[in-house]
Length: 570
Image (cartoon, rainbow, N blue to C red; front, side, top):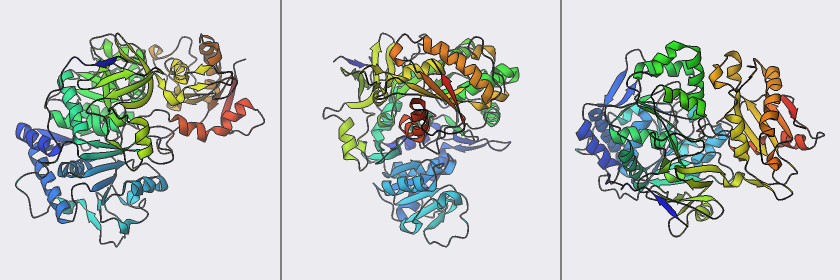
């Protein structure tokens, strides 16, 4: 099999987080590393002050029994306190384990107990209540008050940064680069959790590769909403800012409120922005409705935007291109820290093409189309899950990604997740993402589509609407031809029926055409694990949650939800 690699060499990089922080503090001293924009007057944290706080936290950790190899789990949204503790822990040789703060108590506690943390850091009282046996944790650090709880192991964050014994230098400068520094759960966890173990080398080698490909520096400004419990935000974006000395500003609406995001954008004027297509689509819709928003987004300092997780519709990419803002796309997995390929912004974008390997990373394609990856960014394995590790990590160092693709002149083309490809009862092979992407790129009112048909005579389709657009008409450039611009579910049912029939008939592979579709009045969520943290549909979970609805499309006598609309394609 042919191996595809970058012609560019991977440069030298810091051996560990402690060395990185010490070096950057010397270089950037009075420049900001972090900015809080929630108030009218933003407050900045300089590298010098950040370095002192990290050293102070390390001293407190050591005096309270935390040692190299110990784990600190986090149940919190992105915040300055989390950033400071996490870097102190990682630099010290400990392991950070971020857990999604929106998980319900049972799920959060299950993941918490699985990773066996010595210490836990929590945002507030609500997160504390998710810990089933708090008395078993050595120390629980809380950022906001925990009400009426009398436990000796509860410590306010303020105690960590007033510790008396301040070391002369940051601790952990001698930590080996292969030391695990981060454990991150993969999205859509089913059965035994898959908790990826990543080393200092995994994370820092990738940022060294990116330095070759783009010129980020201490003058850059990041506006960040991507959650730190997920690799896109918690590794790729966050460390892109830290490694290059750029200032990181939190988008305190966390990507859930476009008005707040725009207000933050106005304050920060980001030079780069990392996001998933769903947010870009919301921005594009608002741009077309309000010319003032156009002035906010396309300010003079904006250099490029970065997108990942799912294909960005061409019309939205064109909107940024037309304003002279390059659109860069990448691909990777949590297991690869996460980025493996990057598109070249000077080359015209093609749907499905996610670029060429970054320096240090190699790619090859198996006979069945599965993409293999090798490089310093590949994980050491899954925590307490040797079976899953053996399944994906080959003895010669290649990682089996589970993604299917092909290599073209312009780079890697993604086709599907391997486990999503299914066979019909007649043996015909269906690639559901090809059908789903065909629908998604042409319907602004669609949030998610899910094609099913494993072992059946024919596929069926589930459709989930983007109901937020019912109250605001998108610009014509974002709509398919003759769109009826629905204002509610009944309107959308009528509109969608015509469009699905058109798109279905346009599919040249007749056996992959769906014979029935179901429009479901339901919003998929990260909290229920129906969406990944990067807002992609989690097919295994959706298939289980809507099993009855799927079966009802094959057998009308089966029970189904009342909040559905059936669309016949025949």
